[in-house]
Image 1 (cartoon, rainbow, N blue to C red):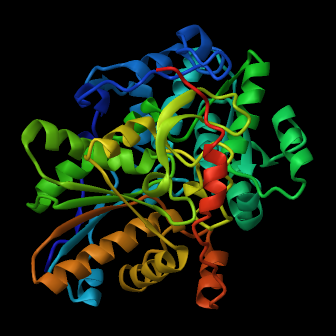
Image 2: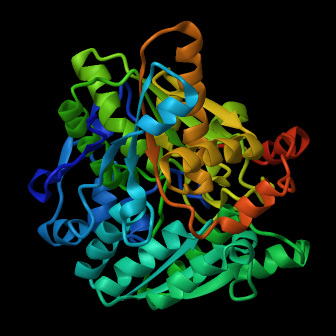
Image 3: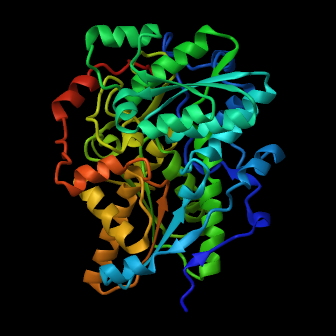
Length: 453
């Protein structure tokens, strides 16, 4: 019988995070203060982050130890399985070997707790008792709510309004863990009230929700802000995914030709792909790293590489990234976790230096791939993860057409049990593909900050 599951023991779980900044050809540009447009100082960041996370954000050490208290909690579900999708291979009739790293086995059903637990821990030992954050589809919000409950901390979540309405059980999960959840934009903050004054029917965006969460943290010294993607320390915490995957592929006796992940802010893709980037630059490997995004929010495929604000209200630091402009409001696609106007500065730099290849798909193509996967492998994937499945299927079909073997690895970043309303729309032929809003993006890009670096 063919082996399909490649499992590690708890003793095999990585005890160090990989920091890709150590292997960048050139250092990342500094983060910029949103008011002064000068490089931020540690004192600026300490208004919303604990010192240990600030040090990780700028560190160039290749490896950073995972605290024992964090490891203990991660072992509730880690290591996660690497699975060979033999039934999907058969359905496609491809000679390719397809593997997926299944992060949907975490308690909240996604990869997000890998950094949520770490961030809650570092805030707790710094004396912080309350965290504020944003969430798109709800995976990050539920992960941080769970992590805060483990460390007996309060949690406030601003959930993008369209996702708040589309995914009621995500907010139920956050509340179950003790978090307070508010649809964004809201009347609770100055940022939210200003947005609603301009557009009372705003469906929200991650940039708007970030503004509200950052404002709460900046106004209360007892509250810190936690971010589920984009920042260097967040991607570093997620590299436990790729480090496990490397060990599991060794067990399978294969080397990957291509590693694929969906991309919004970049935590899932970075967590899987960055250890393979290290192998490419250190060991001479030639693994292609493919980042998949929605055509309705084509940050890497259509955006520009420039300094931009991380949020709509211009309160978060300015960073150099692939961006559609901080005022860009994407359509209400069901992959709510991929609706961010920018992408991780680290991934943007690697993209621009040729280490990452981005692609974009409309959501009907994505849900078609998700349906094929569910009917062959028996797992309902999140809409975000389904972008990676679409690209993996296309890779497998290309291998079939060329008559070549190919080892394909993709990240199944979460399950889609709370996304069944979106599947209903797809199956009923009511899911809308959104055209690339080029005019809106150009308008948003006109308002980029003028950074003299």
